[in-house]
Length: 283
Ligand SMILES: [Fe+2]
Ligand SMILES: [Fe+2]
Image (cartoon, rainbow, N blue to C red; front, side):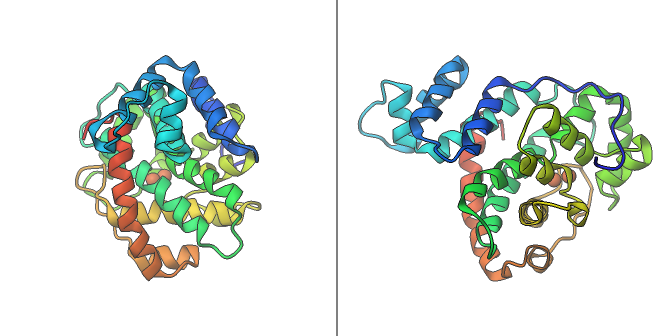
């Protein structure tokens, strides 16, 4: 389906909360109540949501006593972002450390890509508001294949990082050379295995090769451009790796004006910093 296949890589099972969040945000009649019911099934997440809703940062005068109140107080979008990012961080964040590769910075890149993909998608002429959630999740999960490769094949992942350090070789090229597959293909297979929507799967699978997608072109282009924008405004999570991406490149890929992207990317950084804190990722 995606050309080359990852073949023998063991795919982990989907985090239950993430599966439910993706399911309910894909439906047309999503409500805060439904999101609250998913959050309440996950004790760790419910505790986190309550703690954040009552934290000084949000400056509420009244204490939130229940998850439902917290969902109403924080807003559906914040809860969705928090739930999706917290469940990936809690369940899939690799335990292995690799010299020259920083997982926290990679997660910062993913969160920035999520915000960027949603903003870019929403500004495309033919975008549908119903798919903006998918663009966000596509951006958040676009590099999830890297986590899977690092878990399944740590020695070869270490070698891939070594090849990329101090060079301009993108990881997917080094992966193809050393593994005959890449993290986008593995991520697409994972999305298929986990029963994600076709749009979300395509956003992940084609984020480096949007022209290969024969459907969902706008969404795929938004995630591709979101990834580029995240590289443009952030630093590399591979030490010593150069990334040369300009706002004009992002604009050319997405068809959205560079000025508009520049303005929104600053707003994206603020959202990013808040999400990182909410998901409990150490800075
Ligand atoms: Fe990637
Ligand atoms: Fe990326």
